[in-house]
Image 1 (cartoon, one colour):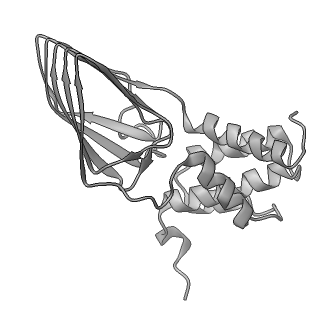
Image 2 (cartoon, rainbow, N blue to C red):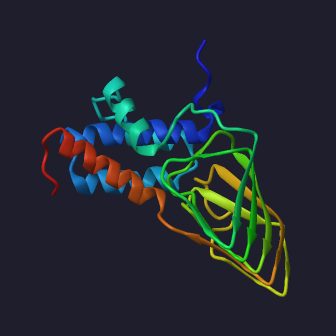
Image 3 (cartoon, helix red, strand yellow):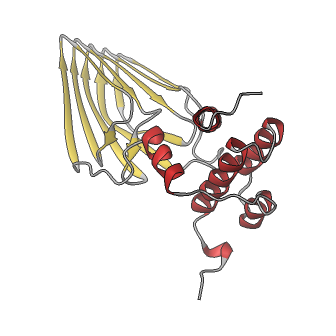
Length: 217
């Protein structure tokens, strides 16, 4: 007996809805305007039936080729990550970006250096991860997409902390939480949103259209 729609994880239903929207848009079943309107609605709602209704009239569904393209665009899928990992930056700079795998706990040691962690394309193997900072006279920049919330529990001594990430309860589509712990002495920690998920889905949808030989409108 299938699981009731309302008992399924809302993010799973949302992703299936967006997948179907992209497939039909990439094959020109719906227009760009209709795709963007329905995409906005899919990202805004937290009601299971509303998500299903958004694509009830669309004939095409995601297939294996689509899933392969999606995996290549959005990250490592089922790739495994170590439970604990350390990143050391002493009198140097370190950057992590692209489709990298975030471990359950990442410890950053930054002494007179700079660290940039770009999570906009990172793959998370679990919904709650910890970022431990040990920073002295260093700078740490954290870039997150809008579906990632940041909770700061770090201590700052004669330093600065700037958090421009969205609040955890202000965005129903947030599925990942990064908890920042540790301390920063005479340093800076900056958290900001780099690119929202809507832009990433739009970019992926247009890349699918181009792969099928369709023209952007």
